[in-house]
Length: 358
Image (cartoon, rainbow, N blue to C red; front, side):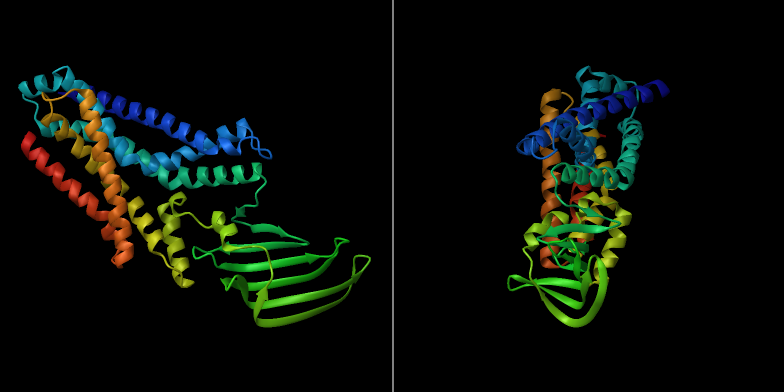
C-alpha cells in the first residue's frame, strides 16, 4: 500500500509542477506583452523588464493557486486513469477514499507553500518589482520609510500616505527660490481634492527670510484649512495607493484597522483579507473536486478533455468568486460571506461527485 501511495504522490506532484511551470511561462509572456511599450524608456531596459516580470509572477501565481491545484491534481490522476492504473487500484481493493488521502497529502505540501508565498514572498517581491520599475522609468514612488516624494516646479513635496479614497496624510512642502534657497515650508495633517483643487486641513506654514543661505527670520502661521495650488491630481496619485493584493493577510488586518480609525472604506481590503485567509480552504476544495471528477470520467474521456473541463471549472470558480465578492460589497453584507459562498458551493459539488464515484 505504501508503494501505491508514493506512486500517487509522485503523479500528483508532477502534475501540479507541470501546470505551475506552464502557467508561469504564460503569465511571463503576458507581462512581457503588457510592458513592451515601456521598454527603452528612461533606464527601463531588457534586464529591468526581466527582473520586473520575475518578481511580479509570485503574486499572480498565488491568486491563481486554487486553479493550479485543481488542474495539477486532475492532470496527475488523469495519467493514472489513461493507463487504467486507477482501475487496477480499485480492482486490488484500494478505495477512492484511500486514493483521495494520498492525493491530499501531496497537494497539502503545495498549499502550505502557497501560504508561505502569500504571507512572506509576495509582499516583498511585489514591493521590489513596483519600486524597481518606477525607478527605472524615473517615476517617483512610495517608500514606506520616507513617504512619497514629488517635484512640482520649484517645490518638493513629501506625502506620508495616499489613502484608498485618494486623500492624503502628512503633507510637507518645501519651496525654493531660483537660487535654490529654501523660502517656505508647509505642513498639513491631511488633504482632500474638492472642486478641482486640494484643501489642506490643519495647515502650518513658515516663511523664511534668508541671505547668502543664512536664515534671517522665520514667520510661522497656522490655518484650519488652506487651498493648495498644485498640478498634482488624484489621477496622478492612483499608482501610489496601497494595493491589497500585494499585502499579506497580517498586513491587511493591521491596515484595515488603520483605515477604520481614519474613517475610510474597508470593504475591498476586507474582501482581499478573507480571500487570502480562505485560500488554503479553497485550494483544498479544488483538490477534492479533482479526485472524484477524474474517477467519474475514467472511461468517458482522455487527458485533454479532462483538462479542458478542469479549466472551465477553474474559470467558473474564479468568476463566481469575483461576482459574489463584489456583490457582497455592493449590497453591504460581510465580505466573509462573499468569499465563502463559492467555496461552499463547490464543496457541495465535490461531495456529490464523491458519492457518485464511491
